[in-house]
Length: 126
Image (cartoon, rainbow, N blue to C red):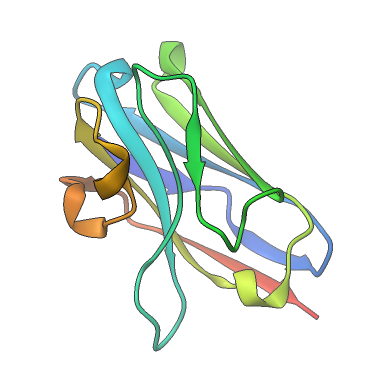
């Protein structure tokens, strides 16, 4: 599946942004989809993931309670609503996908995902 992430930008601390990730090429509803982020000089960090056959979404500890992931299978799009943004949220945000429902133990690993979008920059000023 081809992925395209967009919606990044510059926002002040405490503000909000909503990222979108549009998929094309395959039946998106049967994929596990995730968001990761990578700041300069740091490893890629897990943000959130959603498995198609389950109602729960997994979140990284640093974003839990502030970020919300949702998906619209009819539009083959997933969203990441980011609230109460902090300067440490500054990073390039990537969406990723993998066919089927991943087990929880591997959902946080970048290596679990086959397809990646190009990334969108989020910058949070203090």
